Every structure is written in C-alpha cells, then in structure tokens.
Image 1 (spheres, rainbow, N blue to C red):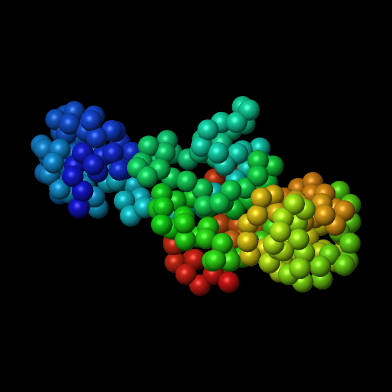
Image 2 (cartoon, rainbow, N blue to C red):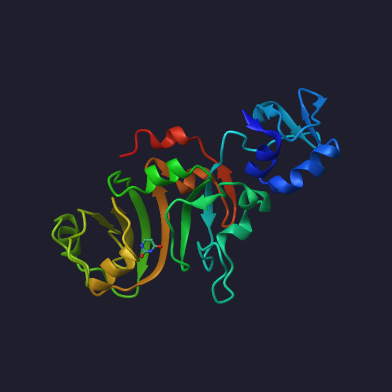
Length: 238
Ligand code: URA
C-alpha cells in the first residue's frame, strides 16, 4: 500500500508535490472511486490513472536488443544516443528509475536486461552469481587454436589485472577462424575485446547472444526492441 502522492511519484506520473493537482483534477481512481486526498493509502494494482491501470505495477524486468552505437549511460556522451531513449519516458521518471543490469559497450549489440528493482539488479550483477553470458564475435585475424585451452585454464590474466579470469569457454567456428562464441561467467571491463586482443585477434563485431538460459534469438527482437521477461528465468541460471 502506498500513499496516493507517493504512488504517483513511484510510478513516474509526476512529483509528490505535483500529485495534489493530479488528485484534485480527479485523475486517480481506486476500484472506480475517485480519490480526493494525497494521503490515502492505495494498492497500486487496483488504481487507475486517467482511466488506465498502472503499467508494470509489479516492477519492470525487460530484455532489450541493444543496437550498435548506443551507450548504456543515463546521460548522453559525445552526442551518442543512449539505450534509455529506446524505452518509454515514464520508466525513467519512476522512482527508482529503470536501469540496465550490467552494461554493453557502445559498439557491442545484443541482449541487455533492464529493471527498476534495485535488489534484482544487484543480485543479477553480483560477481558471486557467475551468470553465464555468451558473446558472438568476429575478429580481424584468426583466433589461435591454443586460445581455447588458455581461456579455459583459469590462469589467463588480462593486461593490467592481478586476478586471472574465471575459466571461459571459447567455441571457434570450425570453418571460419575469425568467428565464434565465447562463454563467460563474469563481466570485466571490455572483457571479450581484451581477451581476444591478447591472443592477437582484435574484435571487429561483438554481440551478446545469451544471458543464463535467455537466448536473444528466441526473443525475436529487432535492434532497439524490448520485451518483458519473467524474473523466474534467472532462478536456475547456469
Ligand atoms: N565484453 C566486451 O568487450 N564488451 C562488451 O560490451 C561486453 C563484453
């Protein structure tokens, strides 16, 4: 249960200060009955605002097909568009606002999760959780055969880092040595690009194709499109 003014702010309609005017204007109903006081406590699931139920009343968890060229920043950087421009503006006005669960580089496309549930974001990004993420890469030079054993060893250390990377599974394409998949259980800064550059094969294209059991291909999303996801997809992640 939330106070009417807190509810309008929580779900991104207006600030708590502006809520009184919304309520005076008769825009908020509970079970068809118009609310008249900002302090009345309401069950968000039974509220209509301007005759419409509150979207994502139980919180937002969506999968976005991040397009190339978009940053995961909340503020535009050097004129580049941000992923938040692809989402309904009201999601950003919610309190807490929607945020990405981890990040992808500007020049990486693919599967990105977003939520307005801080605890869920924290749980899914926790380094202890080791959620598997799969990246499809293309490189400018062939990835050497010995990279598979090196990345799987658990002793490969990135330039400038002290702790070795967790074992990672490299799956090179049998017919194209400049193409394949890399499965990681952690998310260090520019990790895939740095790992492949370290074995002499700088990345030219990178797409995240899966997070846990969620596959980008099964979601049928064009770049820039998003779809709601049930949080239970992450309860049994590998
Ligand atoms: N590794 C990278 O190098 N970039 C990403 O965006 C994600 C993983």
